[in-house]
Image (cartoon, rainbow, N blue to C red):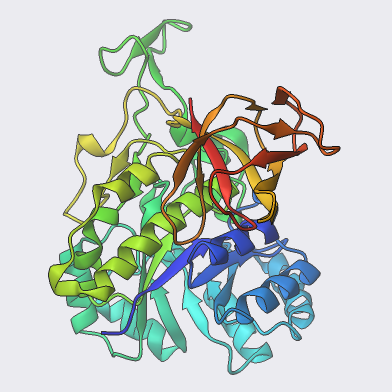
Amino acid sequence: MKKVELLAPAGDLEKLKIALDYGADGVYCGGQCFGLRAGARNFSIDQLAEGVEYAHSRGKKVYLTLNVFAHNKDINQLNTYLKEMAKIPLDAFIVSDPGFLTEIREHFPKAEIHLSTQANTTNYKSAIFWHKQGVKRIVLARELSLNEIKELREKTPSTLELEVFIHGSMCISYSGRCLISNFMAERDANRGECAHPCRWKYNLVEEKRPGEYYPVIQEETGSYILNSKDLCMIEHLPELINAGLNSLKIEGRTKSIFYVATVVGAYRKAIDSYFSDPEAYQFSGSLFNELEKASHRLFTTGFYFEKPDKKGQNYETSQYVRNWTFLGLVKEYDPKTGFAWIEQRNKIQKGDLVEVFGPGMDYFAQKIDILLNEQGQPIESAPHAQQMVQIKMAEPVLKNYMVRKPK
């Protein structure tokens, strides 16, 4: 059995490196145009070149998203953009628009093309059609059940790869095709500028009673009628793998490096554990606990086990669950002294009880007994963003390990 790919989001160069360091086999990212995450910092041409070099030196892959719903004016700009990409050995382009597919083919006849979930592939006939157009991989619509995916796999060529989302935010609109943001905030979700009105609080107003708001359901908090829970399939990896999928994808290009490291690390361990002995594999609840330490909404399995019911929505709040705080990132470590240089991301205080974790390892807990500033002087706290401090570590650490604490 060929090992399934774990594909992670990379909203910028730092996140790309963190995702790969923490176990992703590849990353998907956007340039500064034509991607569906305008809110991410994204990549300049030079940054993309550096990211690809970083990935390839580790035997890993980088896929570029060009999956906006294109208009006429986008085509000329795409031509210019693709010419700039000529010297970057990207592993694949992710597209949703047939016009973009055609243009990429003209510039790079041998380029690998992946079809975005935005293209809404929900059946095997559509999958076969796209494969005949030169698409190597299809990111299936999120509205498919596992049984539908199995049938689709059975009825498509083995040369066609299949990819699905397994973790992260869920869009209430079909395959992400949404006009609510455009209507309510004049920000086009299909061009990367979604305002997320599906997360807003809604009440009912009767036409002749302006200003009188009635809850859609009988709750004092109002009603988040479009507010989906987050997708989480870590407990169901065997079913996904045995459905014949080639790649499992994590959502989150606008999420933090702490989110990326935590989620990628948990899924990496689960996948490796399964492939080490599929017959004896048992899911470890500690990995689910890890996922809960990253910022998240309540979890759902989405459409995988038939259509989600009302339990797939959260009618109480659209806020994230944030029970842990990311304190800092290890930049250097001196094994002789046991001190690590930490770049602060949230306030660190002497006496904090923290957990330290890194790629492929279980976390260890310790108390911060010694906290020093850049000059090596004792301090009580580090309140300033990205302040460099030194912490005496209970165990050896490496660059890009992270420090967190419970709230």
